Length: 188
Image (cartoon, rainbow, N blue to C red; front, top):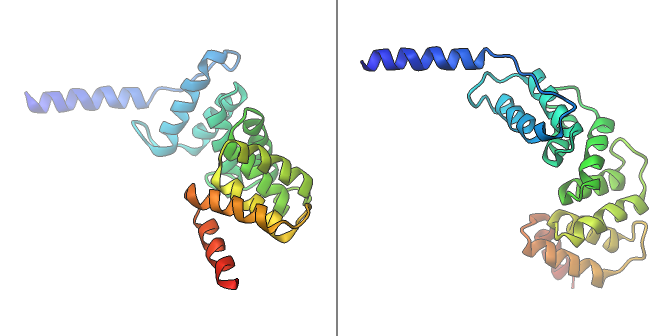
C-alpha cells in the first residue's frame, strides 16, 4: 500500500509540474498569484527551477502593480542573476516600486543616483529618494543620507545631522552605520 501511495503522489506531482503557466495579463487580481508562482520557479518549490518562466511571471506581476515583484525584478536586473545585468531595467523597476512607497526601492534609487549606477550622479535625486525612505525608517537610507551630510555631497556638510542619522541607522541594524559611529568617536 505504501508503494502505491508513493507512486500515486509521484504521478500527481509530475502532472502538476508539467502544466504550462498561463496568467491573464489584463487581470489585476492575478498579480499576487503570478508573484507567488514566480517565487516557486525561482526557488524550485514544487516545480523545476526555470529562470525564463520566473522572469515572465515576475514581469506579469510587476506590470499588474505587485510592488514585491517590482522590487525583485530590480534586484534581479541589478545583480544580473538569471538574466543579463541591466542597471537601466533595474532602475525602471525600482522606480515603479518606489512610487508605490516601497522604502527599500526608494533607498536603492537613492544609492543609484548617489553612485551613478546606470544614471548620471545626481545628489538632488539621491537625497529625494533617501528622504522618502528615511521617513519610513529604512536603516540603509539613514546611513547613506548620513554619509551625504558628513561628506557634504549635494547638501551642506552637517556632522550633527550625519551622526543623528548614523545613530538611528545603527539602532536599526545597519552595521556600516555602527562602524562609521565608531570611526567618528575614535577621531574625537
